[in-house]
Amino acid sequence: MSDDRLDALLALVRCPLSGAALTLVEGDADEGILSAGLPGEDAESHEYPLLGGIPVLVPDAAAFLARHRDAVIAALAEEGRVSRATVALLHELVDGVRGDDYEAFAEDWTAREVDTKAPGFDVPEGTAGELVRGLVRQGNPWPRIADAVPAEARHVVEVGPGAGPLTALLGRDRHVVLLDRSLRALFTASRHAKGAQLLLAEAEALPLAPRSTDAIVAANVIDLLGDPMAFLMRASEALRPGGTLVLTTPDPWPWEEDPETAEAMLAHVGLSLDVFEDDLLWVREHGPREVQLYRMQLLVARR
Ligand SMILES: C[S@@+](CC[C@H](N)C(=O)[O-])C[C@H]1O[C@@H](n2cnc3c(N)ncnc32)[C@H](O)[C@@H]1O
Image (cartoon, rainbow, N blue to C red; front, side, top):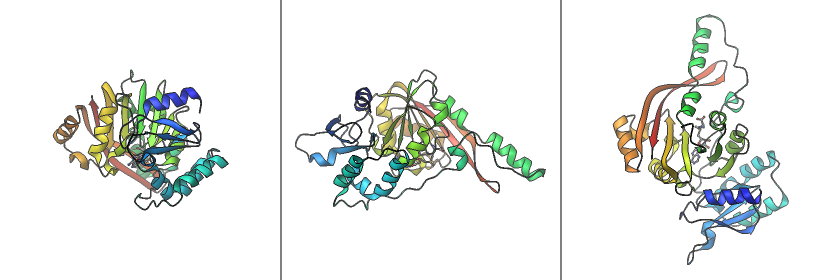
């Protein structure tokens, strides 16, 4: 990572625990340690490694890496980002650390979401085939979601991009930051947004500087969070005044599917609800005999 990119990163991110600014205290921008360096506190609990140039900004980075060490090394290796220094730093960080409190995560994407230009599956002629083809045509919610981000938003953070079906549409002429707790998701989504800044982080402990971005988009993530309000609070703080938050979910339990509850929840964190749409169809093609259909809600809020 160049010095300019490191400076841009340090201006964007904060300690996920304290919100304090981070500095590089060891190594370099590829294999190094960022620290909040809080006086009077245990420094190690506020240290975040850079591994293969990826900042690991989860609240307890050592425990996270102890839990996910193999997955992290495999994902970095696939991208050609593992050096001896990476492995040495990883070992140093996780030595004697238990990661039992971090839950495992699974990849949650289809082959077509990884390769958005891949041809669809062959479906049979006849009524069933017509029905499936019709659903697949209508079940592409990504252009509508991308349109919800104002054209003038130049800096956009996508939280939980997964394989990145939305990322390609967000990235046009914009600076895109991808934030996910899965390193493999970050690399997969970043194929759709060359030059995107990648952050390995947790949505509920969003490590973003106050007023640092024009828009935050989280498609189909909020329903997975243990503490959606923590995410909304951090997201609101990270938006510039007038900034936009775009949320979608097929499982709107945090606001009980109800627009008034959604409005009150967003107002609680300083956001005003602009758009509430229901029945956005999302079709996931798993194979020629398995097509999943979701109905999503879309919320757009302003700071
Ligand atoms: C259901 S997928 C949605 C992917 C994509 N946005 C889409 O709509 O197809 C959820 C994504 O959020 C990520 N994720 C889940 N919980 C997270 C958390 N607490 N913090 C950050 N990312 C999280 C997952 O790793 C995954 O990439």
